[in-house]
Length: 389
Image (cartoon, helix red, strand yellow):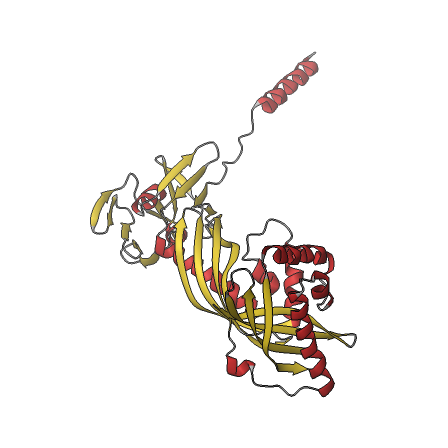
């Protein structure tokens, strides 16, 4: 009987032990500033007198402040462009631009790390701090200066330009806000890099607007060929659209506004040495092109060009639409092969276009890029180098 009683008591004690809930360790306090999480390698944020205290250096630097620490006096200072915050260990007095402020809790030093009240720092920089007790997190939002945004936006565009010039396709697209098709875009850019050697310089850059998390930028850029397949040097103007996500700016769109070929008439009319048989064929190709344009023969124009592949039907439709809308006659005044290799040529042409309905005339300068494939010369591309009424 006594043995059974002890057994029952043991069971009851065990049940009592199991019935007591195990207290879980408190979740670490998380801090984010403008959507970016703050790491605290020197210590862990904690609550004291309903205030969150954090290691000062990580927060100050995340807010863009330079940190000064005077170990002898226990004084920490954060300095920005137009802001100076000073706190002292053990003191509930702090200064913001020489104005004394009252703290709810004084900075303290624990295990070699100095902690400061987080809300005070956030508000001193013009921001807000929101404490969420259920998630044990503090969300800080601060007004980002326009100068800071402009510097970040400019940096992204110039870095993208550097990656392009260095032929780093993956790094380039790391700066592009592309929801899908990134692998294909990278592969296409790598193909371009393997075919062309170009150096692009940004001659002028201006941030036109910053509206929340969207910005627009105007650039003037120059592209110079250094090798590879031939392209004429050109000047471009672009309108970039950038978006900000998780505190980082990315290029969302890049719209060409204008382009011009950097080739003078003297350069275009300087004859390149050309193999005798090729010279006649290439010039004849230009002549036939304008003959087909005069007769509004879309099939004839297409037959002179390299294949457009799956887009050939669309290009033919565009040509036919052009012929239906405009009535031009073309008179070829000059043509000169100014660039030539055994399988590549560039032809400078001067043409008079006449609107047969209005009688108005235009002088047009067109550059033809020719390639030889399987022994046959074809027109691959053309560039408008100028038109005058």
